[in-house]
Length: 101
Image (cartoon, rainbow, N blue to C red; front, side, top):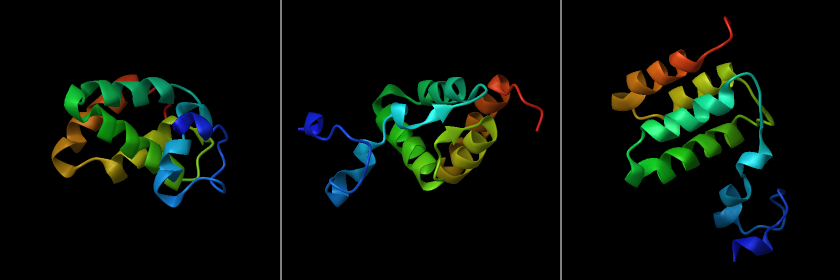
């Protein structure tokens, strides 16, 4: 069913499926932000990774991102991560941060 939605535009996609049109190809990861994204997903228990990944993608979409920088990853993670998991998530981001700003 999803293969019929080959474009990355929202106009032809039913409202409930719009988030599904945003794939990793929709974003241009800069600096070490792709590694950060992957590692945040990897620290999540397997059963919940789908929710983490979709939450991050939705957060990046809400930011209006095409280019994803390390600083944007920090902002999105702070917005979408539950409070009790925020410290662990920020520790992962800190581990893979390559920029000083």
